[in-house]
Amino acid sequence: MKVLVASSEIVPFAKTGGLADVTGALPKALRKIGVEADCILPRYRCVDRDRFPFTGAGQAIRVPLGHREEEGSVEEADAGGGVRAFLVRNDRYFDREFLYGTRDGDYVDNCERFTFFCRAVMEWIVRSGRRYDILHCNDWQTGLIPAYVKTLYADTEPFRSAGTVFTVHNLGYQGLFWNHDLPITGLGWELFTPRGLEFYGKINLMKAGLVFADVLSTVSDTYSREIQTPEFGYGLEGVLYERREDLYGIVNGIDDEEWHPSRDRWIAANYSAADLSGKAACRRDLLSAFGLPPGNEPILGLIGRLTAQKGFDLVERIGEWLAGQPLRLVILGAGERKFEEAMEALGRKFPDRIAIRVAYDNALAHKIEAGSDMYLMPSRYEPCGLNQIYSLKYGTVPVVRETGGLADTVVDADANPSEGTGFTFRRYEAEELKGAVSRALAAYTDRPRWSAIVRRGMALDFSWEASARAYVDLYGKALRKRAPKG
Image 1: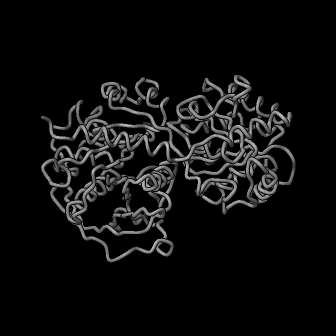
Image 2: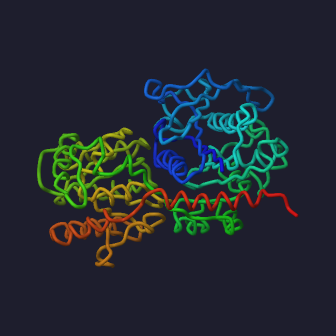
Image 3: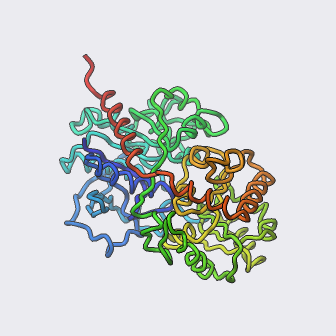
């Protein structure tokens, strides 16, 4: 079986969040179990040309965009683990400082940028002679690919029997654009209906993937059910409920070559469940990296996009309370200006208690996972989440809201003492979050109990193999849907 994983960001080339981790790790995991998997993404300015030398001059392509054509090329690089990465180059669209927009908002031509990317994937497959059994598309930036397979390219040889799988990583980001952009996509107005791409008068590129893909998935079982409800469906719950027989939840694995405390190259000292002594050195290193004074109080880590979805409105609300607790708080991330400024203000007000780094910094993220004692994830919703899984693996006890993948991966240590791996809260309220943090702090003072919680988390298996095999099952379902009838 040959699979092409298409995504707007893929580790190690470009990353703003967990989407890149997943789409970087999955092709490697598929290769390990015998699936010939490649990946494709835009070639952004941030792609390190020295670290990832490209092979050859690249395949030239011409991409129809409405009544005109844009030129581009597709270049090949080594993604590691035997995976070939293909990067779509067009400097007009992708040679920019950021992937999707600035801290003040999205780029106004994102519909055109990612229409170009999707159509470039189609044209490259046609012109290069490559053949894939499955096109595995991820989030709205790739939502047009399943639509193209069923419409404009339905009678084109590489796509007549190709199956499509569309994975929703975060339904809160849908790729909504005004209807005047529809001609750019090349799709006809007959598809601009409630059963097609139309969404309250706008184009919805996430909906394109949901409507046209053969099989749908999302990144946890709980989230697959949540998004069929008005609370989490963001207006698409009806579409998802209608396609519920084709919708599956598969919890993300983690790349344990990249994320494992016994071999992590970014941390001050390696350690394992059998010998946790290196974690003390990691704590000291983390305090130093953030300019916090040394001390024995537990460190609470937080990494993520600074948005309301990630719970930063709750963090802002209890910031002063946190500063009064026996802990240190370290935050890494970037996002909405109001939350960046609010977190920076807390850091200035409590410089010995709270520190923030507004950035995407992979090395520092590893240091936070290894050096923290607890990890905070108070998400309003969380399709899967990776950082709570990294935290479990690193012996850093998660404090999370009970939603989506967080509910599927963290067991409350008070509700279930024999199996507990963290501390959870249900209602999205500041007092609930305070309660969960307080319970974690109380447990921290009971060293035998805390050690048992840490070791249970570290013993869990979140390797990619099981998830990769579950995706192979979905690929089989998609191919059976595409098989000739009769």
